[in-house]
Length: 557
Image (cartoon, rainbow, N blue to C red; front, top):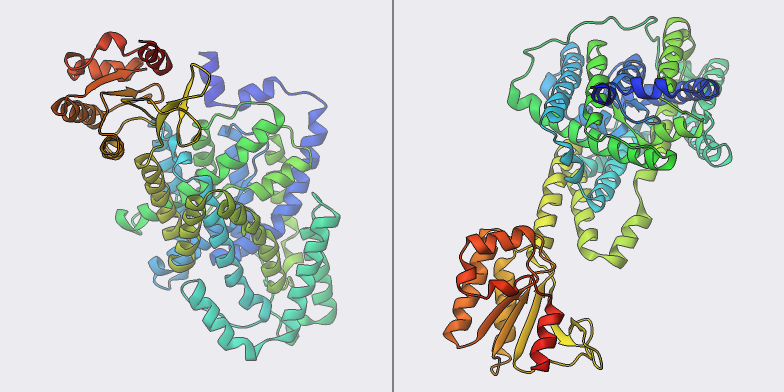
């Protein structure tokens, strides 16, 4: 019972193991994370089309919720670039131009994500993390990165921008370049250069906060707002009021795709990041428990009028590099942000929006991983094309449709791979009693009058016909065949279609007067063959024999 309680309430475990020496590290990490979160949360809230303080609410409340039920000790939860853009692209159309309704729908989306997390936890849907392959995720991130960068370029150039998708935005931006606001561009470029330099020279330090402070001082001293440089303006002081989100704003078929897409993206990205830190620090991540952690974070945010949050690699890397030992660092971060909301919001009035665009730009440009795409092209073209599909779908359709299409592409990629298994046709390694795939070992001796094949995959409805066609094609090329041997040692599972294929192969061979033998069958495969009547057609006593043992006996005989 104690173990179950520990799993459902992770603080019971890490707090019991807590060492006094960790407190200093967690405090430093929490304050550092808050320093990182302030500029990033302001920028992401602007990207989502929401007031800047809403982004801070996401880090403050989301971190508290995740610290309560999350199983990762270094994962940092807050607004992310992809989810922010997803909210901007989807909620705007649903709100119909009503700004209050827009904010209410964003909070309702966070509440719905929390509800879906609870459902996913109950039904153990942690398989969601496997719906998107690494190659699909690389393409999706690249598409999301390019899309987000394109949304920020108008703010860097000081033009209006606009457009529905990447290429539409690009065309509109090019058409507006004659109206560049040169002071805005100068501010943005200087901020980008300072952020990039700080990223390389001072890794893990709150460079973003330093750039924000410097830009406010310069904007105030030079009177940049009077020169037409857009600034954030007054940010409301105080903590968020807690209340349930407004229900009944949308029909289920309007709200569910948005919340499901956010959950899929948030869970995949969060678990991927959390696993890397768990491996680094030598503890076990409970991927099912992560649903509760993510759900608690989004529930807390929705009650504080925020929008959906997730664990992200960049903020978690800041947390880890600053020395975080436990989720107590997230609590310290939340307390620091609460102090800022109570006493320091007035200092952000003259923050240039071009600096926020620069922060977003430098936060997401690494999502375009050209090196990974080149590696895929060199090693696995099918993975490259899968990544390309995800990239193009995000550019053309947007973040939400892109992530859903990426999930479908992952499934179809898996089915495509499973439908074309390697079928090893065996020959004898010269001078030995061993047998090997003749396609990979062209110097093996052919087996006179025998075709021995080994499907290197489970025999399922999606590949059974492929296996049968390959064997019949080999049989047509060897008319003197007297025996066909099927090795199932590399087939851990077989369904009814696979068993039907073996029946059909046996019947076809019997009509030609050719013997058929199955070897290497184990466990579930043997049970299915036995139940389906293949024991009446083949020698079931030999099913568990090894392929090389049978072929060696035949050759000796």
